[in-house]
Length: 271
Image (cartoon, rainbow, N blue to C red; front, side, top):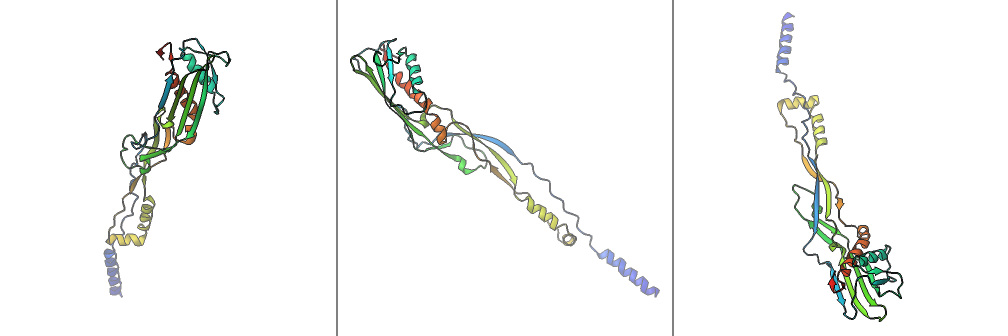
């Protein structure tokens, strides 16, 4: 009986010595530091763009000499616009020292607006001015914006004689209007793609059964997989949408009228 007890104890001790300890618990690897930055980009028109640049025609006839302080009245009956075109004409002709008046019959000259139009233009294609470093949304490389074609036609008549002394026309596409540069910004950031997978891997391999298996066959915890992403573009400056283009109409008209008035010769001096 004693012999059986001794033998049983020896077998038990031997079994304990032969049992392999469980592998240690796996821990979540330290997460990497992710980068994030705001990137500003500027767009310029592609070389293939052929939108109308500023086109000016101005012919002044010598029948009557226009001198400073002479009066001028405006016929803007064809102006179908929602902004104050009269104010623009008044400012620009005062600038060249002519005197705007409301009396069309007694004014020395009458300026007639033959035509003013703001029409939807072709879409304008832009490209990045400078390359962006790193991986970004490929759609950022090109940008398509709306545009507007504006035409203004004027005729200046000597009131008493009815002689036309000057006629001029200007047209431009809004993409060629000297406005602020087209700039956007976006956030470029890094993201861990497989965090859930690593959490599941750690959980599954920390069970007692899995630890026993790992004691004989070690395994490696997966590494973090990082990818780069970018947010949508946010406009910082410039004009791109249809509503933004339409809002430019008063400024473009002022620009064209100022350019045309500068062509008018007063006292034989080109203003």
